[in-house]
Length: 368
Image 1 (spheres, rainbow, N blue to C red):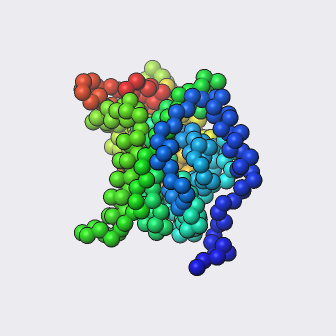
Image 2: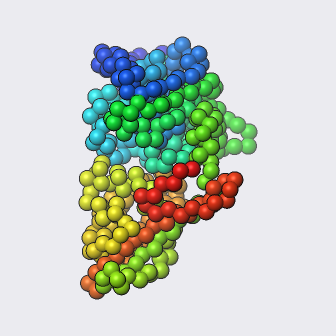
Image 3: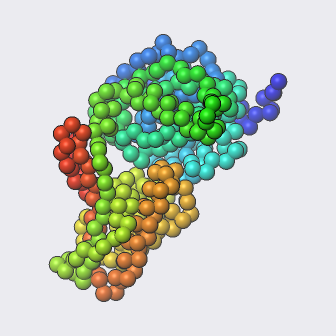
């Protein structure tokens, strides 16, 4: 039988601090939001337990930590600095850092040891908040459940997009937390499947259970986009009046990058990189300024090789990287004689049901 000294982390921890913060947080949540919780009867009496939910903003973490009846250890990003706007509160509470896309055994040992002490771990299988629509599940939750023997409790959150801003503006947003039934521990000894395939299938099933708990209106909105395609038009000229389009072989990859604004937000806000010109595409800019900003972005991607592949998969990440590097080449070729540039990333998609075609540039956001 293992003793407490055999674990890489002790559970529970920061007990006095967290027991002081949680009542204050619940009062603030009651005053600043209109939160509805359904399915409390599905909460098990004790751990080990893995809580999972959809993730588009910070508020899901807040609700999970404050409204669940146990001390929760939440898994969070360890590969990049936290957003400085709320990093202080995250550090105060504490979390389990994991290098997303390159998780090392000792990092995964932390949540595993929490579960082996009959603790509760919170994890968001989508792995980040780079898109408001449902994303594919990563296998970390399935791996943890398989190795710990812990059941999984799915939660569907609603009203989260823009909720933090509404809270700060005292608008009392309506938030929803729907708690599902516990799922049995994941098995990986399934006939006809390798362990990797079994864990991937389990992660997908868990994500399906989460999706079923998301309020219907939000779930349907995330499913209304069909035939999504990206493009990127690069216009060069000596002056604004002389701008002309140039061909980009990997235009789809570049367009997808610029239509995922959280990627550049991380570089600008979390990493404090001078990439502001990349946040202002769509209008004429100085070629040298855009080129310099792009070089900083590419240097960041070189230093963080899993930053794109973790979020989009290897094929899409490779296309995005190729698109950005082709942009860099075109801007380098134009340096000196093409003094103005306009970059126009485009996103095209159709609405399910009506077939309506929509075209967006960064900054556009049509209602679904």
